[in-house]
Amino acid sequence: MERGGETGPKRAGPSERQLLWAGVLFGAGLCVGVWAGHARLLKPRMVETRSVGTQFTNPLLECDIAGVAQSPDMRLLKRDIQKIISREIALRHIRFAAAYFRDLNNGPWFGINEDEKFAPASLLKVPLMIAYLRWAEQDAGVPGKRLCFQKSADPVEPNISSARRLQLGQCYAVSELVERMIVDSDNEAKDLLLSNLGMDRYRASYEDLGVETPTNPGDTMSVKDYASFFRVLFNATYLSPAMSEKALGMLSRVEFQDGLRAGVPVAIPLAHKFGERRIGAMRQLHDCGVVYYPGHPYLLCVMSRGADLGDMDDVIAGVSRAVYVDMTRRFPRAAMPGQLLFRSAVHGGPGGPGGARRDS
Image (cartoon, rainbow, N blue to C red; front, side, top):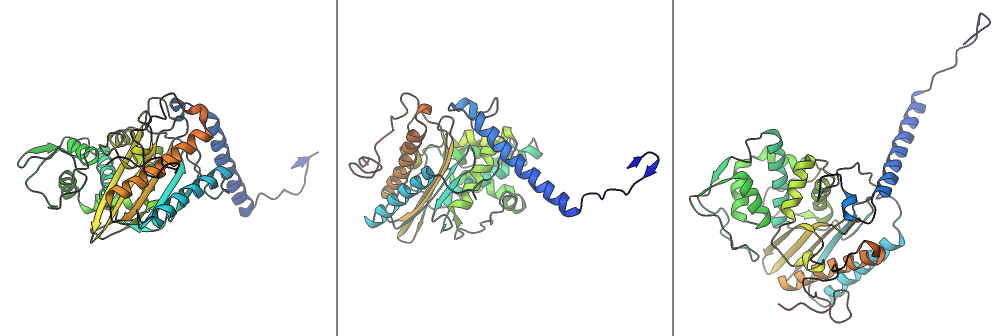
């Protein structure tokens, strides 16, 4: 600094530690600012929860605030879901279950047995779809490539299947096979796509998200890890917004009408995927997806083990309905006429969280 022709002592510049702390504080402030701004933008109307021109994605910066103490409402919902699971185990309708809930507006979440491992089964069709859509972003010729169906690689007939099947000797475009794999949960389409993909591309969608790659039918995955695939689709943080929208659009047309779908009114869009697996005398049934409650979309995943698919299906539906009813309690102005018209009653017994048991 110069004054009157004299040069005084120079002021010391900021230290590396001061610069580091300044960066940390700036980043924290940015995250809080984005979160606050995001919350202001998310009015209780579905159209305002997403970027212009999108239906199923919300490609905005996400700040994970999972470390923040849960609100009383969140703790109450977790307690209610835990009660449902504990009651159904006591009644021997299921042997075990895990659940994961996340508010997709601002990130708070809770899990129940969220680190327990299950056989993901058909749930793995979602990361396979993601791998193909990622490949299609890099090579525009991928969706139109035709693959010919010669024989089934999996002779086991699934318990939950579609009437639409691949025809022997017929060739299909990759785009059609991906759609059949997701919408119809077609195992033959899955096997054909998997054989064409290559292990490097297969592993990439897992490794990029920090999820261990399953390489054989006995591999397992937790409900919390699996939920990450739906999070990256909703936030469009791995695929482009257009491809993320395409993926969730297919998932919104999944044929399975039980599980999560049975616990959410027909007027509410749901993008989800189910999976079922038999291991000896024990069965597993899972359902995971995004429920587009107006202005307050949320992610819900339930994985279960038991002896009877119908009982597990009812338990998942009961958890789904309990969460939806809690949303209508907390955000009543967001509900629209007709949204309480469920496809069917769900398991739980008179007065229980799920209402009356569904007819089989």
